[in-house]
Length: 194
Image 1 (tube, rainbow, N blue to C red):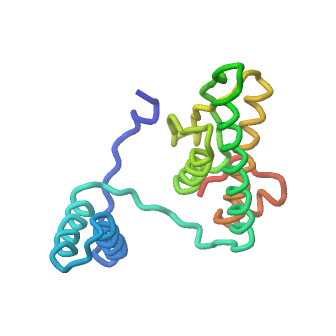
Image 2 (cartoon, rainbow, N blue to C red):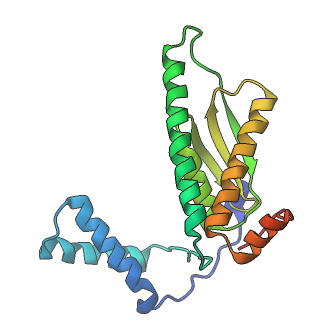
Image 3 (cartoon, rainbow, N blue to C red):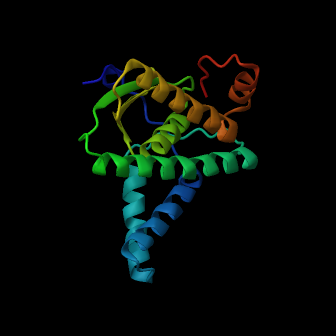
């Protein structure tokens, strides 16, 4: 069991219908999309399921920064498409090359941001690029453990960690808090809590 699993339990904050309404609406839409049926009966059942999910299961509040930079979002999107294409060809090469299967390793990367949302975004972006997958996340220390294909040397481990940190920097530029963005620009980003 990870050390973060031993934290003291939190008291569930009181949610109001006003704060839960967007989530309920979204869950009903997802229900209809999953079943590919937007009939009244199916949507009413989806509403019942959404109410059960929101009322029974604890969903921690997600803190948003309140900002989204469209330019850096386009930069991140363009680079993301390039990373996927490049990694796909590398994986293709691993399957046909004569030297056999590449070595893999579990690599830990400690992020400098401590926001659940941004840690999740970074983890998902890296996992969607072929050749790496999130194994575990330690929220307490903002450390993500990745299973990575084709890691043979310590230099390759450092290169992978730097690539994840560059993705972290882009995510901060796109949707980080003003404080984390300013710290990134000034070069003083060590660990920013959101």
